[in-house]
Length: 103
Image (cartoon, one colour):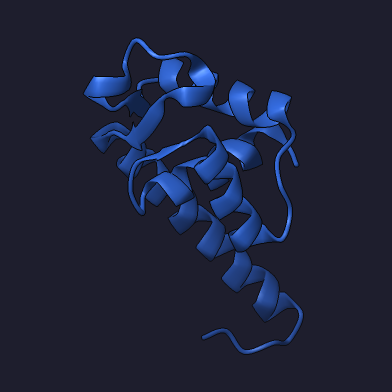
């Protein structure tokens, strides 16, 4: 999975509520059928946090990375929505080009 794809699925599962690393990866597996490797998952978490799109839950702010519960920020919700809307436009165009009716 590409790093931006990993970031998008992390944001997607965090949009449903705060989770720690293992729970994030479990939700990703339920959504996509695949788990992210530790480097991909924790790399995505680090990049998203650095961009202000996710943040640790206050009580977990000083915990180790693997134990911290993370939540999506308002900026993260806006970024996820924009990305999903763009993907939806691309999907509709692709389906039209294939002659498949879109929902």
